[in-house]
Each structure stands twice: as structure tokens, then as C-alpha cells.
Length: 172
Image 1 (tube, helix red, strand yellow):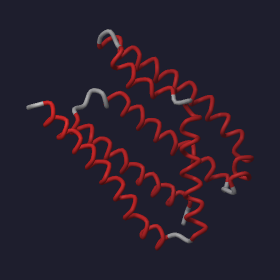
Image 2 (cartoon, rainbow, N blue to C red; image 1 turned 45 degrees about the horizontal axis):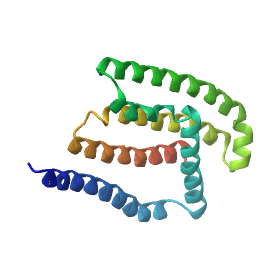
Image 3 (cartoon, rainbow, N blue to C red; image 1 turned 180 degrees about the vertical axis):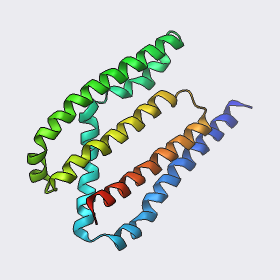
Image 4 (cartoon, rainbow, N blue to C red; image 1 turned 90 degrees about the vertical axis):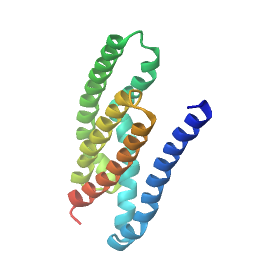
């Protein structure tokens, strides 16, 4: 297969995955507007935005170095050692930041106009996203383009599942 054909094939895979996930987000708008009031929709949007910040704070984004190191690793053992070290550091930072967040939850709840329970729900939702990110960071370089495209699509779908979980946890 020529380089141009391979590039076109891989590019079309990524294009399809991106278009599919963006179209799911667009199609979900009528569903959300039917099920949620303006106030509830606002709370979910603030919550999702806050989750993005909490996800970075929980691990200080230490797990994203895994993919970059894949290309710099001397051998497979070196890469595995780096992955395990990165996961240990991320876990330690996660524990510390989770404890801080639990202690600050009354203040965060007041500042964000959330209930304390919803504020505490940010930790498991962000943790789920971090674990998902770690999985992708480790396996993304190892997968071929087609499988990678499928994994990106599944990751985006899991984000929609997280929104549904929050909706159920919040008790609407």
C-alpha cells in the first residue's frame, strides 16, 4: 500500500470517529432540553466543566506523559517501568488531592451552588475519567489506527455515560 493510500485510510478513520462523536453531542441536545429544565442543564454544564478542572487537579496530569515516553523508551521493559512509575505518582497525587477536595467540599459546594453530595460526586467521576485516560495513554501507541479510532469513539461514548450517571446520582 502506498504512503498516500495509508495516510488517506488512517485520516478517514480519525475523521469518522471525530464526526461520529460530534454528531452524538449534537443529537443529544434535544434529549437534554426535553428532560432538563434550564436550571438543571446549567448545573450539569457547570458540573462537567468543573470535572475537567478536577480531573487535572486530581493527578496534576502526570499520566499524559505515558504516550510521549512510548516513543523515547529504550525498550519494552523501560516503557513498562515508566508506566508503573507514572501510575504510582498519579495515584499518590490523586489520594492527596482527593483528601484536600473532601476537606474543601463545603466551601466548593457553596461557591459552585451545588449540594455537598454533588460536590463529592466530582471525585469518582473525575477518577473514572483519569482511569480512562491512563488506559488510553498506555494502549493508544500500541493500537493500530483503526483500533485507535474505535477506542477514541468508545472514550467519547463513556463521557456521555458519565453524564447519565450524574443525572441519576443527583436524583432528578
